[in-house]
Length: 122
Image (cartoon, rainbow, N blue to C red; front, side, top):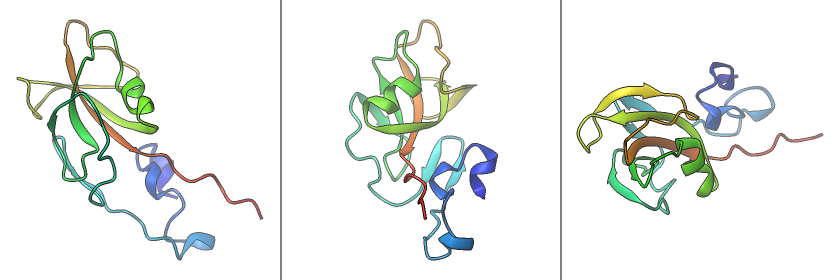
């Protein structure tokens, strides 16, 4: 399925085989601007700026010595991607892994996503 690329976790169980009746989310990324279903991540805190319509990609504050994985997991979400911003905005200076700390910066762009459902056992 689409989970094989390691990025599109949210569509791992959609659209084919036993999961044909599960609608696949569509995600489009332009730098850090992402659109999926509206309101998937409305409760994120320490948000300096929203970088996507669904609220899942944000410029998060309070990130000194912290990773985007930690940030997303605090909100019961998974980390999809992480970046260092160029000037306190949603423009990317450097791509990071979800587990990477960017030394000396108080903010990072983090892309979170809802936890995928557990696999069905039949």
